[in-house]
Length: 278
Image 1 (cartoon, rainbow, N blue to C red):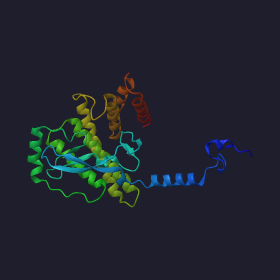
Image 2: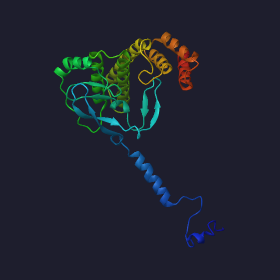
Image 3: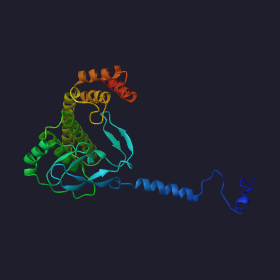
Image 4: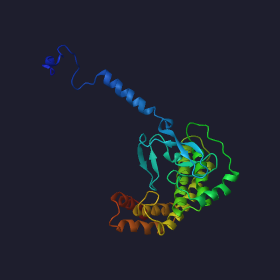
């Protein structure tokens, strides 16, 4: 066989020995294997960090765990837009809780609070609040559910917008779903799984109620969603809680909207097919 690399003497490579052009060298294979092994070794702990916050209610400085957005990869999403990331459930880290006064909110809302709302929180929550910080390097589903419940309580006490209440309910519902899925991977009691599903359904119903109330009176974007995405979400939530006529009504609104993004229309088409089959 002719030497395909003949003529490289001009580059000082006279006596270099190489394998076949199409045969991978051992070093390359080892490097690839090592790279794959390193990918497998990435843990949830590697994907989070401690972020510093200043509480807008009591001025306390503290840290809360947060997902490194540049490191996580989106694997997909459920039909109600619950995101699924590889290696970590980012939803566990979305609620921020001040360990001193008990003020809590979803990350997007944490810094925005009026003086009257802060006063209500100090009177109705801080006065009786006590907290023992999590000991683990990551948040468990129970840790996350507790923080999100505190966030929901704070939205009620401060008389927050319907959309904020609804979005917090939706995040809580997703956490119960995540915990249920985790339990189903190991040994579990059917009663506990049924309880998780019941909690999820109740919170999805609250989310639907809150978003529907907000739809006609709040401005868009709402919770990071445009009008058409919100209409689709309302349709899917209605389907999940058994309000099929409402689901069909919102699906139709998405499908006839000329300026709705195609990806949302595609989701609406899939949802329409589910409703027709049922």
